[in-house]
Length: 259
Image (cartoon, rainbow, N blue to C red; front, side, top):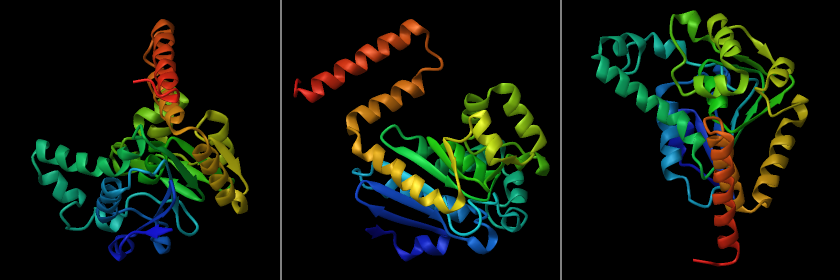
């Protein structure tokens, strides 16, 4: 087992690796893992330094909640990334700053990784979007999702809107984003936001079992399957059939050592 330097803990994020499985833990339980730009910077740094042998990444939150979203004390303060400071930037500078924030989330969609969010308690705003950027979401039965940006007059901007729309459809995604309402685990399961829902006491075990099953599968096949499914929505049936043929051809050549 390897862990990140102490600086990561100071930023409110911990990293641990056990063979091909890495675990990224939001570690500010006293504020329900409310997120800050320092945490986002650490998440981005973890993504850049992550060893190439990592195949599965588990994202979790310490304590009672996955993440209560953006830390409003930071957002309303006078730091370099506070909302008032961002508002005073030029449109181009503001967009560039937000792009940097997005990097902390969007690496979880990397084709070479399978990423799993282990969600207990609240996953609000940035917390919900962090879970959405993962390939799978295993929920404890006390989990609650909410896209609460609208309550601040803001929009979701951390890479969550496309995945949300893909999972639940545009009409329901619009309702979720415009109302900011809480979505309990049973509803999340019913509408396609959850990969699985388990009792709170079984969350870690269920996620670890899922990670083990993924690691046990052929790495090349896993990467090809993820790419096939990710690319399927915009393709026609004929285009998807062709993608399957091409992927299978690559697998056969790889498995038999053909150049």
